[in-house]
Length: 126
Image 1 (spheres, rainbow, N blue to C red):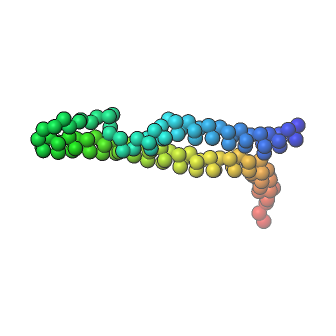
Image 2: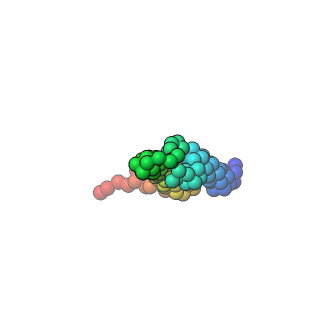
Image 3: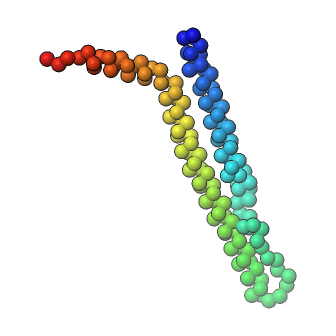
């Protein structure tokens, strides 16, 4: 039974934790649509553009200005979403970097804690 526990604690469970964290990381990438956001970073926001069909110079300038504004809004919204995703991803990876070693070290920490508690409980100052 002890061998089964050691096998689970040091081999099966960490592998399962890595698998779960990998799936969660992939879910975060899909939730924030990172490949699509990167591919369409400079695309107009909601394809909101106008086309120039001839006319005056001011209409041409207004068309260019509107299209640039739409692309600027798209860039701002998409880059904000990517920054949010990156922040969440970094926090997630930091937690995983703490969780997995802590899970592996937990049995040793329990043994050290119990031994320290027993040693301190039997200590009688003079």
